[in-house]
Amino acid sequence: MKWIYLGDVIEQRREKYSCEESLPIRGVSRDGFIPPKQKDADLSKYNIFYKYDFVFNPARMELNSIALNIELTKGMCSSLYEVFSVNTSIVLPEYLNLFIKRGEFARQCEYIGSGSAREYCRVGNISEIKVPIPIKNNEPDLSKQQELVDTYNGLKALAEQNEALIKPLSEACQAYIFDCKKKYSEVKLGKHIEEYDVKNSDNKIKAVKSVSVTKEFKDTNAKVDKNNLQGYKLVPPNHLSYVQTTKNEKCFANALNTSDETYVVTQVNKVIFSKDNNVLNIEFLHLIFKGVEFDRYALFNSWGSARETFDWKELCRVLIPLPPPEVQQAIVNLYNCAEEAKKIAAESRKKMKTLCPALVQKAING
Image (tube, rainbow, N blue to C red; front, side):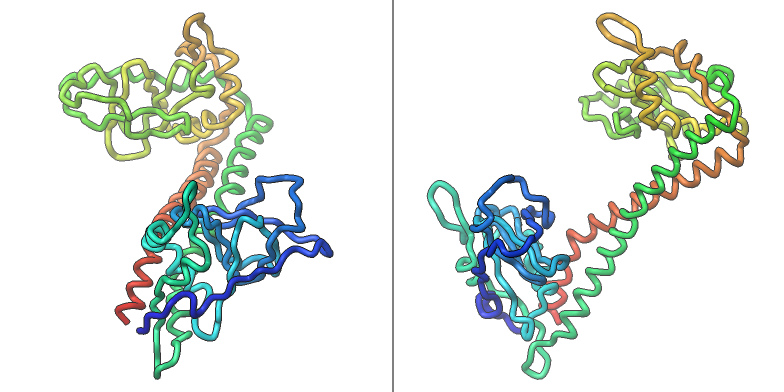
């Protein structure tokens, strides 16, 4: 391992846009490249960047507002940004990106930034930061750098692949539900559901949840005395809870308990379950409730002066399609695939934040 100054392996690019060709414009944030915010700007002042160049906002380096271009052959950015290329015979741009996309690098930039009204961290400033370079036979070990990059890219690819699945799977799920309305007769929901109104009278259940507008259970942000939960309602597994008021929520806020644990919710919520899950799958019902079409229906059929509510009586009047159990389960399985993809993507993104410093530390330790 050898530590070298960043300035020894980077060179600032100062090329301006010539207006002779149409080029994509990019802004930069801590999460990478973003669409430009400013319109009708004087493009003649814009900076040019090429593939494997780094583009950064010198006024936001404490936020890690820097991105490596691995997508565009050529692009341009605001003249307020700075661009630098990398000497690839010594360090791979992707390896350098692992070093740069760490919280420690952002803290260093904040420390060395200078200015009066606003602190800037320019190419000249970051050139003084040292970078660890793997060495083999007294030469830069590019294969070792590539090995670390491949490890990171593998996790990144896993996140991106699963993120690409979420939208089409979710849209297909709602499309199948819509198709059910054409193929199967509708029934009144009240014939197939019952209210579950059981209080936490012995105060044994401490898992307090709120029903979010994202239609899932979340840990409540309210100050709750967990030693005094006798008035809260129980939500056992495979039971659904919903918020009766709709004006503030602007949707039919509901959540299904898919865990093996019993939750408690505020007593103003309703809790329901399916009379026969082999006739009406509660997960299938939850998918109907998750659709924006049902939100519109619930909002339209909410009543009240001070507070508009979609009460139990209105819920029982709802007409829903009732396909065979195997069709309901197939749609639920499709939804669960989308949720699993979402979970894997989220976990991968979370791990990526800690993987960069871990890989750099591995390079340091050899």
